[in-house]
Image 1 (cartoon, one colour):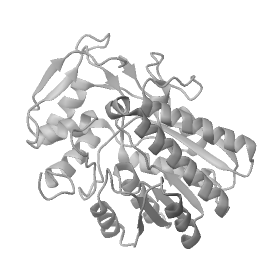
Image 2 (cartoon, one colour):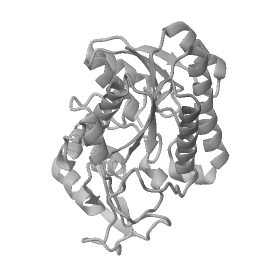
Image 3 (cartoon, rainbow, N blue to C red):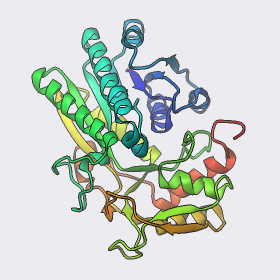
Length: 339
């Protein structure tokens, strides 16, 4: 099968591209490289021993994505491309709605014109908002609390409406929790642009000496150690989840929704301690006030993915930290050669 991976040069996209190649699929990567590097695609080729058809382009350019479908003979699409920084989305919501929602509409138009109606969409647990009921199941109402999350929620609505209107479509919505880790080779991993928005890459940059300390937002949550609890999932488990969804929906139509998470929560301090053990060094941290809207606990009910896809997370927090540290220590500045 030939799979178009939008945002395939990014963190989750590159690991999923590698997984697809290793399982016999051909891959076309479409990426504007705003939050990614072409080096990741080159390293995926190196690891897989296979060629990636890389197309640099932006989903806001309808002609560019039309050209990919006209030239490449695409069978299915995995859609990662989008802006993803919560704080930036609050500061510049129009940028996020324009990029994420309109970009997706352009992609869907191109798919429709080309007769390609098999899509796996990279959604997010942010669509659940600050729900305190855990574990979070797919049956919960959606209530995103920031523009980034609302773009994911709106796209889910668009895709559900499309599938209901045209039963030929096969659409999978994967809501995943907190990706961490890297490929065990240390050759590909997360390369945040600027200040990391997520905990594990921030800890990794502290461990490698790029930042002074980890800021821990809140020490008085109703949790065992007072810090927030989240569900951290290894990026290679996420990649396997996308492959499983693609295979499951091969001869099915409709809309499918699955959480991808471990079903277990780890506190901020537990993550810092696990990373300290993996790196063999102490990770300094400082408590600062809570951030508005942060829930005390958030972790997945992943039983539906196990039941339908036969998928479950295979790697624990220690493995995530071990692999993430191997990547970060081997590539202190990510894919860049210097800061």
